[in-house]
Length: 583
Ligand code: ATP
Ligand code: MG
Image (cartoon, rainbow, N blue to C red; front, side):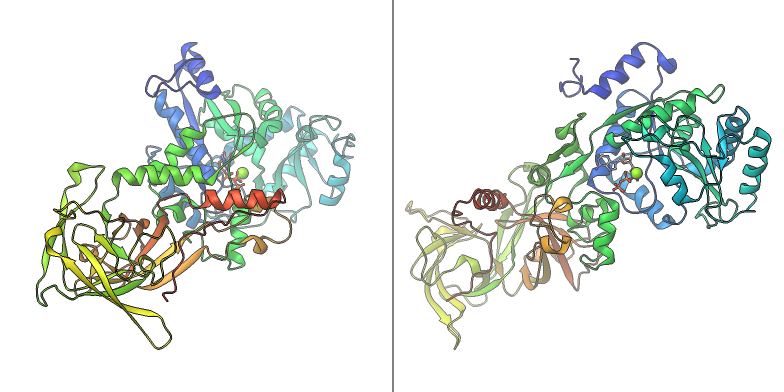
């Protein structure tokens, strides 16, 4: 195996092939690839694998990758999707140089080539109804039957095809089919349809056409028109390759790309099908294509996932010829890995519990030094204001601490990050017994975090100063499904939604440095996870989305699920951090 000189990773089978073609001087040593989305929905994480491959290979071999919209199905397509796809490809870090291309730009050429096939006796107008055509097609284990219209004369076919184009016939009245082999074991070769009649407005060509090319006809010929050298697509097109090649074989002087297939990216707990994602939206199970629980690129961006993490995941997953499922925790790992390097640390309290430091001067405010990123010295430091009244996390206090709970409890001493040791002297409760406020004392000698006498504490808590903190809404996102394979799970998709996939906390308090945080900014709330400022956030109404927790809390849940399925009693699985009802 040859290795990639940049990463010393072994080359995958596609790069091996491209490298060999370049070395052999095929196509003059040029490499042209394309990413061919249909503009009928938003791109998802699966598409990212294809994008990274198509653009990556072109970049690595000094070639070019086209963005080509496969816009041959006017009823499902829309410019909204064109714009979203362009935005998402750019966001991932790729550039197609110049304008995007469209299969619809080739409709005239495709029509001419279809006429060429008719003239050569390789295509005919078929007038079977859609139901009849289906019956004639046969089944995988049973040959099809030839259409009674298969032997129409070239003249009749040319005349009918032109009249199809001119709009003389109703939808479904005729199709143009290639004349190949109705008994082929490959269904794709049983006289496939090239054109169908569809009286529908197209988002680019308007009412100009009422016949539209089918995917197989448009796709390969578009590749040829664009001088694509390597047409990389997913495994479900493997059976289409003989047809891809047949078309090229029967058109004179056409450029010859090769089609190479690779396995799709599938992720556990995730749907990667536009059709199924659209269903989630139509049934209002999510808030739209950019609901941060969706696996679309626009949603991942909104949630705070950096594009580098997606590219890193795609590189790690690699290329194979077998479909497999990648654990979602690998994406979460890639996100943490990237954000650990790049996201500034800040303090934010999601479920505030007020504490009063009784021996701290009433009016004193100290500006304490807080480090922005221990992983990146160049990120510098900031000031965090400290005062007599603070908020800590409700979760960080227990009146009756269980074993191994080392955080704050009555009589116990802990460290406040960047500040002082404090000791809880009293827990104040409301009439229902909920702890609503703590009284504490602090040790002035511990400023900056250590005790001169060497005494130790077992916990360091995050906090904010009540008078300085800014209020915010924080949306805690988690996996949308609790079934590892939602597409194949029994029953309805609704049955497998994770009821905890979104929790909205309206009364969070964040350190004041976040007051002006701009939409899209990514931070780590210390001890809690990575968060990103929502696009709808304003300085008056801050909104943060949780991107990921700091640790993989699902590993335990999954172990418990497996044990349950194996019929064992699950070990007590600790759920992701939940609010602690004080008292
Ligand atoms: P979906 O099944 O979600 O509708 P699609 O294949 O119909 O996806 P297209 O817009 O046709 O969507 O896809 C554009 C390109 O992205 C195709 O070349 C396709 O092979 C590739 N692609 C789609 N899904 C995946 C995936 N899960 N993994 C890798 N590549 C994918
Ligand atoms: Mg497709």
